[in-house]
Image (cartoon, rainbow, N blue to C red; front, side):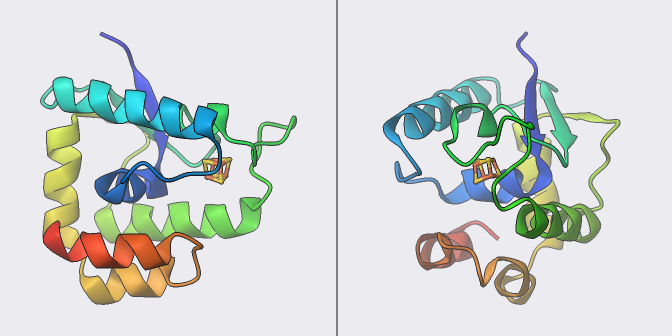
Length: 132
Ligand code: SF4
């Protein structure tokens, strides 16, 4: 089983991915990760983190220092969702478990409050209400 590392805010991002992203390489990698996770929905193959992850690996915003060009904002997203969902960096999760945690803890108001300034908010805000 392949282990996938996700920054905590990416657990929210993958809910509303519709094939848009920072580059073709980024989109292809993210599509592959989501497909893998869906195929292994109940396998505990996800490790959470607040550092660059398997999605960042193919992102043009990832710097050589292994941080994000928007690190301060991104760390704020990660920390906010860690608190809202009570995510644990030392637990292995399945996609199914993470989806249930989101459903049980996230509200539209909390989502707007954390993600309101993200450049992808215009897409996610239309889709997230079908999920939480
Ligand atoms: S490098 Fe930054 S912008 Fe790119 S996927 Fe990672 S957190 Fe998102």
